[in-house]
Image 1 (cartoon, rainbow, N blue to C red):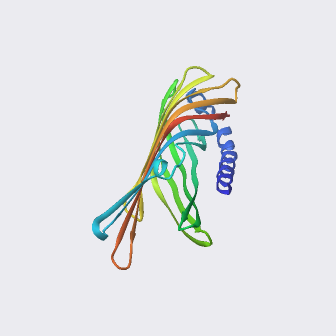
Image 2: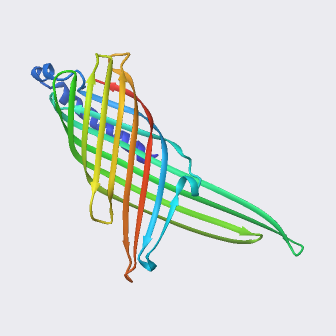
Length: 285
């Protein structure tokens, strides 16, 4: 919760800082600015995503590998509501900044109880297990918008930060005998971010848009790629407040390489696919 609060606070601070820039845009820029763009806009909403998550491990010891499907093997829910926030602001009529932030926090708890009578003795066994997977993503990009009419096309270059943390714990008891074990780990990285966009204004109340972005990092302990795309519409029943609805797709494929002092190697691959509808409250100024 603290991480999410911090992210939204940063969005607010940067947004407030952007207001003077928009206010001081000269009249020539305002006249040439596309009707599909706003000087300043905030998106706050959620993404109702279908999840397909796989973790694969490969080691050079015996050239062995193993896979784990979170939804089938661990019972993770196949649908998850993911909160998301974006904001954009223009500097002049054709350039500006774009920010995006979301978190995917998933967990699953499992309990088992069994009893048996062995040679006249009643035995009772209990076991509990908890698995958790958290993914955090944030990006910032400088965007150029091309066009002055009802259609504009955007190109953005920036940086993205992502972090993965996972944990697994288990405990059990047989009558009065108890045992437990747990493991956890996390890693993070920065990577370059490329963004593409299209905006179309039907009129002052209705718009359509397409967003796409890609993150790719080669080398290092954590590498891989993240692809994000969304097609949506916006409706503004009021001048500064509206709603947006989109269908989004996200693909996260990350590799973590571990090398041990004895020469053994372990490669972990996290492959996560999300797709589904998203809804936002939109503020524009």
